[in-house]
Image 1 (cartoon, rainbow, N blue to C red):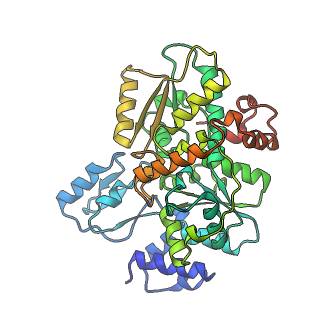
Image 2 (image 1 turned 135 degrees about the horizontal axis):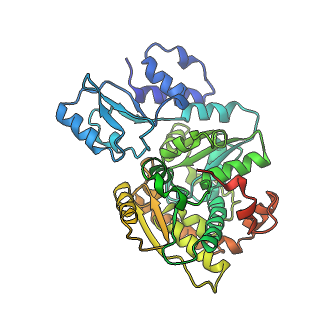
Image 3 (image 1 turned 180 degrees about the vertical axis):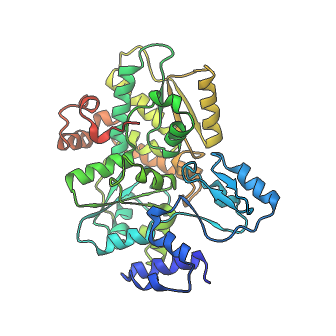
Length: 413
């Protein structure tokens, strides 16, 4: 019986050759593994690719090592991963010495949709993409490379991080009126939001009702082009779970990780750095730095001040990146030790650039993201004409309408 890695590679090759049927009847592969590849929406974030043969001590370490208590030991000694508790941090994959755990993958079905549909297909690229596919890969070159894969266009999600920054800055100025008031963000991190909703639900009232930039981008595309196929590309496994949330289903059709896209480029012998420029997006510095730790709070603070420069109460940030640090920060809040009025939580160390399915180390991604942010001619979304133009196309007459008429950008927890 062939391995899951061999199955993945063969399925990817066939999909890139527009062959979507022959692998379905291949008896050389385990039926459960084949189902994981062909029906990813029915599978958990972490999939089993082999029987667990670890010692009791190794089992215990695996169970104890999960920061969300999602792993338990069954009566037969095998392990079980609870899909409701698993938030996609991928720690267990790194700890599995037998490589019997793997991330859920949408790559086969996404490629099938991209290459067989007659509808428009859009790649929604997370702000963390800078530096992931080579130092010389600019946004314009990446757009050209993705068109070679089969996409009709690429949208930088940073432009929608701009819009969510405006919304959160407006909410801060409206709701944080005295000492002791505080707002919990970041809306962009599904692990952080899920942690609050599932474990610390008493803090939900302090979370602004905003969708993530990924969802904002997908909803906007589908409003302008209802039949379009949307494929988010980023460093995070938890984004696959976010796309399946009951109130978000249908906004993002598929989620691919940077590692999955890298494997597509490799099989097609696509070197993004060799392509010509195809520039289009115009996010501000604020939207571009969402990808690294501290970026969201920095963006919101600058925008809140830009909107109300004479306001007495300014953003006072407390931030944490990585699950242990986030839990420690929440523990302080619950104990009454409220040191700020704007709390930023990011599930991965370093922020999105440290996501478990990134290609380059977090420090490399951070440097690239900051450099890209500094290139923007706009410091905040408040002065970004492209944001204002997009809002007008969506029916917003003023920026303040984001608080009154923003169903497309609002989530009700």
